[in-house]
Length: 301
Image (cartoon, rainbow, N blue to C red; front, side, top):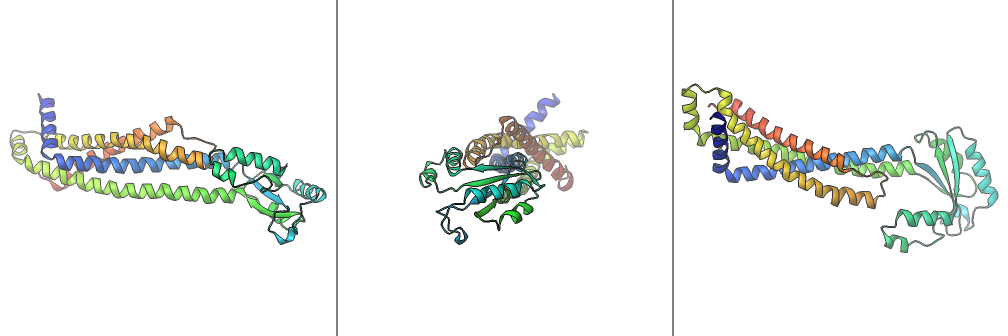
């Protein structure tokens, strides 16, 4: 009988404040979708960092006829220059291995990496990417010694530290993540205000019923339970909508980034489901908690 009464009160509350409830559901859905998207981006960036930072190289591009570097004098690096530079690098204690990559191998690897962007491939001809030495470091953070040893060597066109390029990329992705979380925080604040207003209006509309319940000895928790569950149901509905939006984020945003930026690690559906479940739980607890605090602090029923 008590359970039937609680559900009856929940239905009455949701029906009387239908427009505010719909607004709350939409706000929670947007907030949890942004929150979940930020978490998905963070997981993608963290997994990519752990994978790539141990595999980055220092790429030393050798002089070629197409080089704009005046020190190259429009000439290819000689075999002797390449061998001397390789020997110098191999003697460094920070270096794990030195691999030579010809312009033919570089162009073939370029075609493989950017196979999804045919326009980019069409704009690049074989020979545009010069011969290079790819230096693998024992500790990727100790690249300054390698750069110092190679930058003034004859036959060197330019030196590229791949770790610095990756850090710039990951900073951009970190910025997207924090932007999503910041917008989610604003939406959460709006959801809390909506929950408070919805609960106040619902309690005001049912002040006669709650007054009678108090006169007959009903406990505070029994009186407050329908209002708290109203908030929890609205949070659950918003969380379910957010789950659909997060699936869309995985397919349209995360997977697109993975293909465009050539991430070696791909976000799994197990990770996405974990984020979805967590987002739904946060939405339910947020609305239920806001309802509880509103009733305790602002309403006397």
